[in-house]
Length: 206
Image (tube, rainbow, N blue to C red; front, side, top):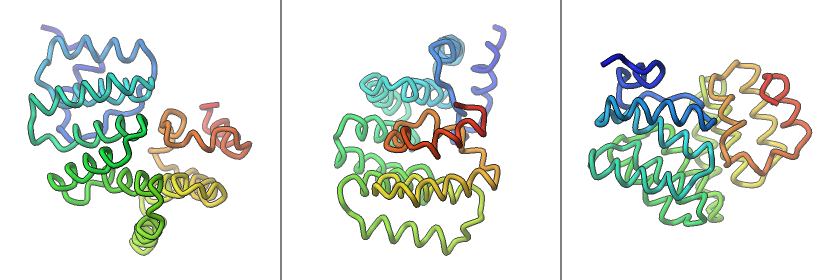
């Protein structure tokens, strides 16, 4: 059977490759068509979950992630995905547990590490989050992706000024994670800030 475009290409990627920003119902439909052709592809499964997350269908994300874990019991990214959904449902401790489960399977996974830091910020564990920020800074603040991750952590802490500063730093570095800030609900506290709006416009995402 012929590969269904984007979804078909996803099926050929390694299981831990990011799926890329997908936010429209049409994108979700394409991924779902791919799932009919490649029903056991973890990558397509993740693409579907991320698309649902960006569409803010959190209950569907949680259900889909749990189904993935039935099929692929030790698939770490599915724990990360489930954690994202639980966080948005206000189940912060359960989300933290899922991020830790991901990290037990893939130690130092950057997505799960920053996700755990962000949910810790929401739970008031400020000292732990600041320690993670310091760790990122010491690792090299100009390294790929580090400014974006620090911005997300500061957003969780409610430190808007620092969050915006680090997003602008990520922009100057041409960090390819930045398009996600338009879609990621964890950046919602910044959306009314004129500087955040201006940054989206500079990237032609506004």
